[in-house]
Image 1 (spheres, rainbow, N blue to C red):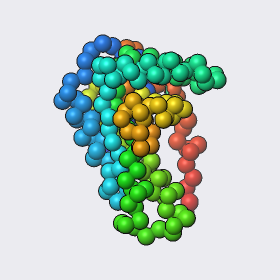
Image 2: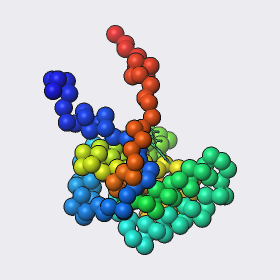
Image 3: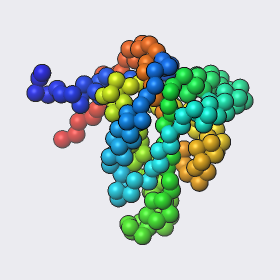
Length: 202
Ligand SMILES: Cc1cc2nc3c(=O)[nH]c(=O)nc-3n(C[C@H](O)[C@H](O)[C@H](O)COP(=O)(O)O)c2cc1C
């Protein structure tokens, strides 16, 4: 192995979005490992302003039913993406949702001095960025265990209803992540070469 390669970098390269799953179960221990990895992410002021909601059985079905029943109310391509999201939720043995709690938004100014006009925007952005780090940790931990995932952001379009199903009506929608074993691995899309996304400044 090259000194510039290791298991972590391999896991990062191997992660890809998978949208249909086998019926093989995900164990409670695997779920715990994913949640621990997510909770280990960096967070603004170490406030961990996230909540992880694990959906199985009837609750997972309730979410799939909500998404498929409302999909046709949206124009294309959202309707198609929502139908696909509903199928992913349905086929995965477990779904982990992530919501921001809003705690940093409410109490951030006790910890950190920020201009009043800036405060809401600042702390909300910090919550979103913290939760995004937690989501990526969860996706990478899943990959490292041989599990497949997809980050479903499209459910933002019906976020209020989704947050109701999650029991987090006061939270902010971040992600819904079906977790299971890949039905098929299509290899994932090509990425643009990193050089196209980098600017070096000296
Ligand atoms: C914020 C965010 C939202 C996403 N939302 C969706 C989604 O709603 N439905 C979906 O199928 N994939 C979704 N994805 C997955 C992307 O389509 C996927 O990451 C991208 O095509 C690159 O493929 P890869 O993950 O296999 O590298 C989302 C990814 C991110 C980061």
